[in-house]
Length: 130
Image (cartoon, rainbow, N blue to C red; front, side, top):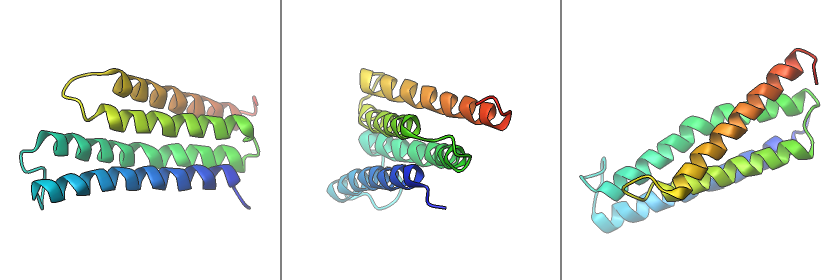
């Protein structure tokens, strides 16, 4: 079965993942840091943002795929996935700062809200409520 929403969100997530990777590599090359963060605060922040992205995205994609497989997807699911990815990008930009900032806060809140919404929808679908 073709899962167009899941495939689209997964492809976009891979591009965001590559964006994180490229930002880290550019700093590594410029700072001549081969392993770890080399005591470079911005590199440490970007590495953590990338790790956070890779920690969060797989379960979210599984929820999107499960909802779509259950036949309960549609435009709302694509919008939720897009909002999720925008939130993850904002979080990545926000992680460049030394202290809390609006892009990071909006990214974290957007991530949380979409994940809670998807989890709630999955439970309701499993219970036959929607």
